Length: 253
Image 1: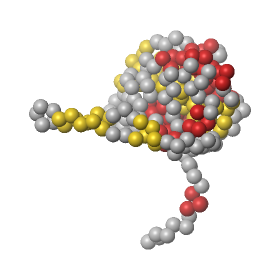
Image 2: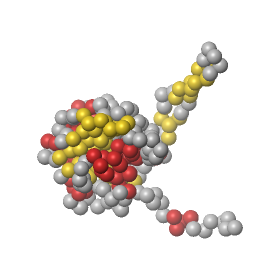
Image 3: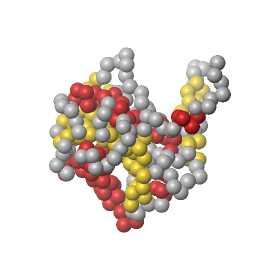
Image 4: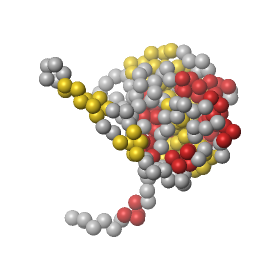
């Protein structure tokens, strides 16, 4: 199979190289199209009025690899439209250094890149784990994600139309892993704040303070299950709820 790999942490991310190696070791052709720089939090943004500067590079395990000066969605689009040279079988975005769970899935560049591929009709996975995940789980999960992509291509994993298969690995050794659960996203939200700096010429700058999660993990949703040593799978669909439940909208004219 021919897989397109992308991410939002940038071309030099060790997790991207881990995923690339795992795909190559399972005998797949790999094209990498990844941002030149860190692009977390870009959601589904892509370039409309600016050109994309692309530079070919190398990555162990990849048949072709490209650095793209753009967003994760830019990388995904230009990857499957142009850089791969032919239609790819699936698009894998990640492995992200940090969970993509809860409401963070709406702002994640990792998810955005996979979502763009899903919208275009490709089997698409967003793959994430915490940076301090044990080494044996890191290796296992990279191969797990590639096997999931294989099964999606063969139709062995049923997926809603134009949906992203969002995978997250628990931060535990493989020996503690309980299995895999399909689940909904939690109500996880981050408590953001900014630090203000007053410059010497009247200019003011604000830096985002490191985010602190504010949550009460629900046992049957992504965060609670990850904390309980399950791999979580959530299908993120274009139609996130049954709209007919809200059809009786009181304001009509």
